[in-house]
Length: 141
Image 1 (cartoon, helix red, strand yellow):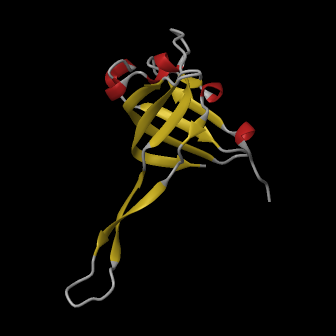
Image 2: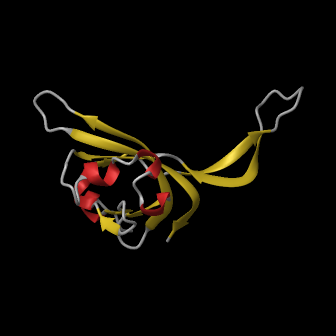
């Protein structure tokens, strides 16, 4: 059995030009990567316990990346993440996010940038975070 740490994680994301960029060194935290089955409550009158049915749909929940605020105009977190709605993205489309967890396990999905936040704090370096909303098929390899 193999175990992996943060030094085994690789994070790639499309830039505004649509070119995949390794942003691993910009990421301090990832809130988690979920794949969820969508269920519908199916219990009826007279049931004493809740029941659910699988709808046939799956989704990935929002992913939040946190890093140091960097205003470099080509590679900084502000350049990469400050694009809510993907309005600066080439063609106005989605951005690919790929996370390699170590070894050969990876997670890839198209995303929309939902929110970008700067997090100044007294006595600390300014950080920032981006909330990504996945859309469409998740590829896990």
